Image (cartoon, rainbow, N blue to C red):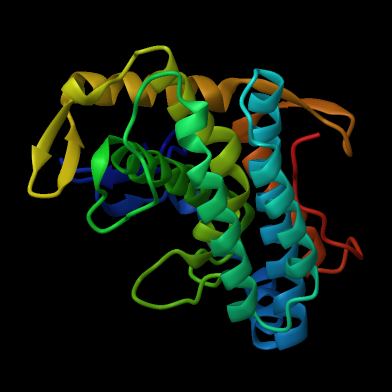
Length: 275
């Protein structure tokens, strides 16, 4: 793995992230890390980046809802509510206030999912620890896969994975990976979930119930991973770059986009959002 420069991420049987092996070529770049720390310690500049990421994430989940409006789902009221929260996000005075608006937007977004699913699925709200119900289980598993993708691309760009701008560093958490993943959860993880549920590829019979949580069996878990990898390999048009890129490449480009802002190569940071 080291010879071929392949990072390896390890998970427990139940999908919990255990750790990573990172090849030596991914050694840290001190200059970028110093700039990253300076931005984190500057409340104004940290809030600027955090706002931009949250705005991009909310725009991407709005795009998901818009797609299903075109397919006949009645989501106009929810879209209006989330759109109004974008204005509040833009004038947030602190990261904590910003997180409150983001949580409100996501709660409204998740309330729409029962209208999006073509099958009768019990999903009222996002519950993480433990994930209650099959949809919460799929969200947690999909997010864990996405965090690993983001960690890999962060190491490629020499960013410090432990220093984020939305999520606080500490407790051995890769805060930067969580930040970057916010942009891509709607367009990668959520869309894979919509597909496997609406096409009947995964259903409640594919889970093992343990206490209040639901765990994917091995075969459907492999099926979900294959769909996740297929989505990562899918190609989209990046309007600002006027190029066609895979979603995996977009994650890497987003990291470089942030690096270029931190080192002063670009004046404004504009995260990726679906056209």
